Length: 309
Image (cartoon, rainbow, N blue to C red; front, top):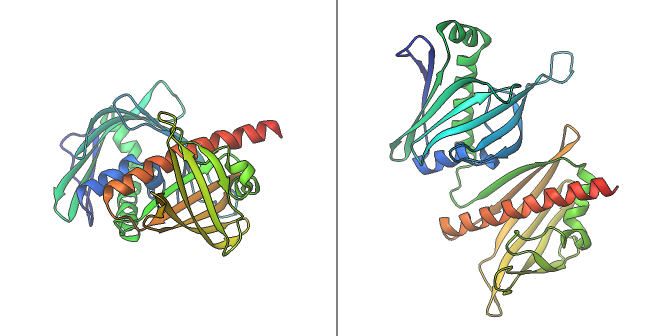
């Protein structure tokens, strides 16, 4: 890990070689369920509001500093990133701003170099002047950037299973309500399934050892997709573990295991889904797309419930 001598006096350049192939590292920078776990210096956490990785797309988030020495909450920093160039999986350029939504504080680029089982990551921060670079460096940007890339490397190591899907979402709702949405079938019917395949039947009783079976219906064709499994572990209000398998031509397909954890987070609820194993990357990608659409619907449903209450 190093901070390279910049070619220009108004730049900060950071680089690190991480132990993962380039496509996987690209996912770490472009998927909210990954980037929120490592983005920022040591001890910092993130609340992500939107992340649209495309040219002119916007990533809005709050970075939460660690608690102060007296135990009081750390400072919250508003951040936004607007992407100006996307070249998957090797390069992106973006504007980075804070409290002012119309003025970027600096520009930056991220470059990935394919080294086989490893990838060299280079971050280049481009400031308006040498004086601004000096001020940002004195604020701790270089050390913070080095820590950020070290956290990326550590996260890649800790999530090294290529056939495991991990999705993290933070909902603006208390944990008790999120738990109820997951475990009460009358609530789950309102959000289960992606927008293009919403649920038409939810049959489950969230108890260890109980079987469950749900049905989705295609908005486009009307085709029914049955799936089900068994609850393995239920710990209210924080943990659900259950098996999952599609039903194809009357027979159950390959079964995998899903774990849902719910954690209180600044009067919100952080949910982490883990699902494994998958038979192929395309199968994993399909579940990732489906779950994220499903959790968009869950977020909308929770907001409706809170408004109703």
